[in-house]
Image 1: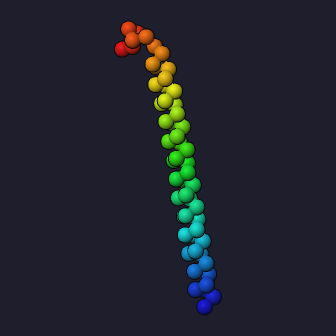
Image 2: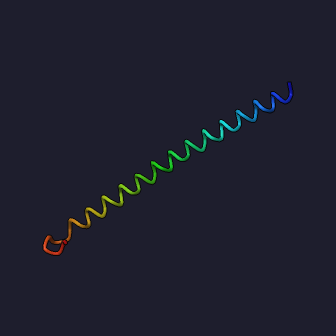
Image 3: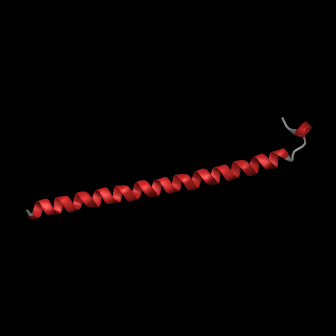
Amino acid sequence: MGVQLYLSAGLIGVVWLVWIAISYHGRESTRLAREVDERLRKSAELLSTIPANLRR
């Protein structure tokens, strides 16, 4: 009975850690995507200030 209890507790612990890792990864991906979007928007704004005859 004791071994089964330890195995069950260990399995619950592993599932919990995997859930935390997945949720952290999702938040980090969302943050990076927002940062990239912001940088692309700023680049587009900067490019729009360059006169058309200088763009290639």
